[in-house]
Length: 165
Image (cartoon, rainbow, N blue to C red):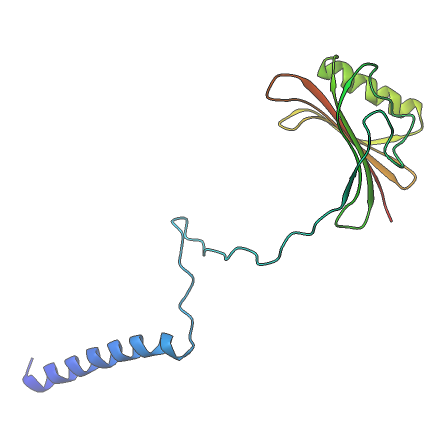
C-alpha cells in the first residue's frame, strides 16, 4: 500500500473516532447495557407504591363485612384482624390465626363450611408452595383461604374476604 492509501485509511479512522466521540454528547443516548443474559437492564420504577390504609380490629371481634358464617377455630390464637381498601378500591376484611388442627383438617373443614353456607368454591389447590388454597364466591364477595405452616411449623389459616366496589 502506498503513502496515499495510508493517509486515507488514517483519515477514515480519525473520522470514525470523532463521530463516535461526538454523537453521545449531542443527545443520542447510548444503548442500554446488557446483562449477562443478553437482556437490557431496566431502570427501577420511579412510581411510589400506593399506600393501602389498614384498620386493625381487636382480635376478639369480626372485621367489618367479614362473613359471620366463616368461623374461627375455638381457642385459636389470632395473629391478624383488619379491614382495608386495596389499590383496586375493593373493601377487604381479613383474619389470620394459628390453628391447633392440621393443615389437612382445616382444608377439609373450610371446604365443607363454605359449601354448607352457600359459597361457590371456584378453585382449590393443595400442597402448593404457598400452602393449601381455597377460593370461593358468594354475591359480591370473593373469599380466599390460605392454610400454611410457618417457620416454626405452626399451622396458620389466613382468610381474606374482598367485596367488589
